[in-house]
Image 1 (cartoon, rainbow, N blue to C red):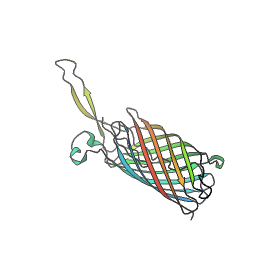
Image 2: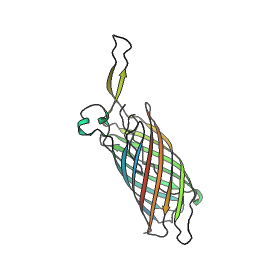
Image 3: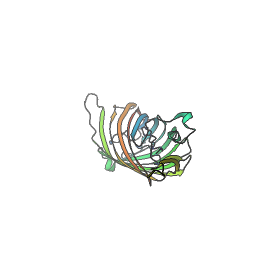
Image 4: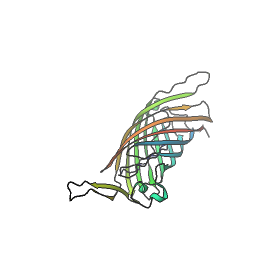
Length: 261
């Protein structure tokens, strides 16, 4: 069973694996629940790694920017790319095994984060974008999450803001272009002396995949503007397609700056 489950997150974390599920979106938040000052712009470089059950390991990076447009709304976007660390290489690409997995994955996503009533302990997010691979697969992605957090300042003399956060996340990946098919092994067991065990590889198309999971992390912001901003996040997703499922675990870290043009 050889197929990719990529995730780049915000990580940007990426994975390719053994079961056929459509590429997921860039769902890591890497931001606390408290809104910034209207007009603030946040620039961040993100790196991440991932693995899981029925997935290969991967590494990726993302460049993201977001703007606090009102006291209760933030909008942003990100571009990401990643590599399958367990890809078989050029020699393996000549046959029908793990080599059929994509080598590269890319993703683009835009999102909104909303604080009902300008609350600093609750944030709702919604995003849309595209994910794809170097083998021609392209998928439309949609996602949403609810984040709960508690911003606090460890010191009044140096009022850095620390925000532990976490909450559930759901996502949908809808294939638009299939690209190169993934070859999945089918084994027929021999049940007698005249019936030998045999195996063959068959192409398996991507199908709409639903993801559900949870995320949690810590966001840190220094005072003032321009200022340093950073976050560390753990993400877990379970994906279900019409024929397969897979579990992904990813760790993402982002660092950047918050400015007020």
